[in-house]
Length: 179
Image (cartoon, rainbow, N blue to C red; front, top):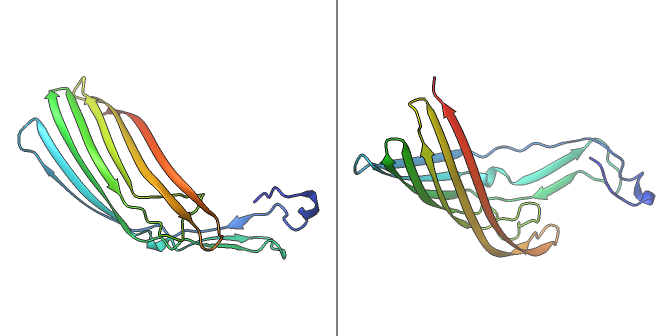
């Protein structure tokens, strides 16, 4: 841990190491697909993530001083669901097109919203296509666009409040080869 403080406080905030650990949440998912014909496939899944295991972010500094105490930040996250719906259409034997949507609930309750992890419920769309030029080779292109509406709030613990809004665009490319 390196602290950027005025020279007069350097002795109170020395460079030091720290330990931290986080219990990862359990994830339970359920999915179902339906193929009404050889060209069309519908898919739905629901995912529950038990973020309630993330109740505290804790930093145990190797060196402590009067102003530098171990950091304990309450998170109090809650378990939430995410839902995904998609469709794939087989244009021909070597080209597949996909489109979908998602709704992802925020695990961050009111009073626990922080600038380091601003969060809100979000909606999104997905799309992409696959090309299979040979029996062994596949090429995938896809994107996700997700948007979280503006959320106002903050952390009761540290008294930091703000207004947060996010938009995310994630393009991706995949290459697969089967042996």
